[in-house]
Length: 288
Image (cartoon, rainbow, N blue to C red):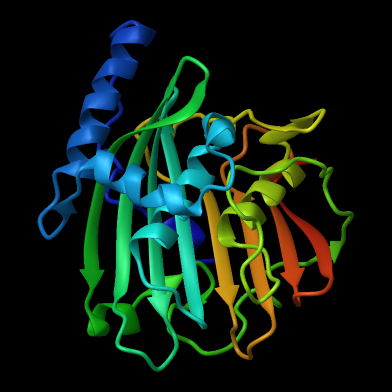
């Protein structure tokens, strides 16, 4: 499995020992900021413009405060980039304390001239807002880099579904629904937009919940030993691959703080009319 090898350049060579927990978090946060944001080749965007451009995607601006950082990152990419009929999107999520670091790589598998792109977002909770945007950066992914890059399981530009044989999938039930997101949850094709698919999958993984008619972001448990912002939660969305009319997405967490389980995954299969669900777990080596 290639997943553990995919990082955002945030891995730290040596653990920080000695300081009190709060000081250690501050140290790690400063290091994560510098390695995540201060990278060559990335263009920094004005966050007010990113948020303003995303307003057209919001059906209920009043509910935007409940949006998770994962939803916001995906909505922002949709708002800032041209639409694609056939694409593969990989989201990688890490955190330090309550601060999240998200990269979204979107690959164009169609015939248009729209480039492959990568976005980096940094969010912090602020009062009633679950994820307040603090930083936004973008770069275009060169064609040769895209060709040589793996998206979790398959080559990023491979024109075939990449999720089918990835895990030992078992039939699963649809997660609790009943909430109205702040954005239009379906595209013109009838398929759920990436943000809504990710929100449903977050509920399936119990890192979000539904209270009445409201979506509530809880956030994943940060794995022990991954306190530097390195990604441990992944979302992969194949849209129109290999054929139009079918979207297939997976979301999962690695390095779980569990004596028996190392990874937990959910899969969402959307043909525009019906949605199927599957689940998979990866056991920890040597566990009883």
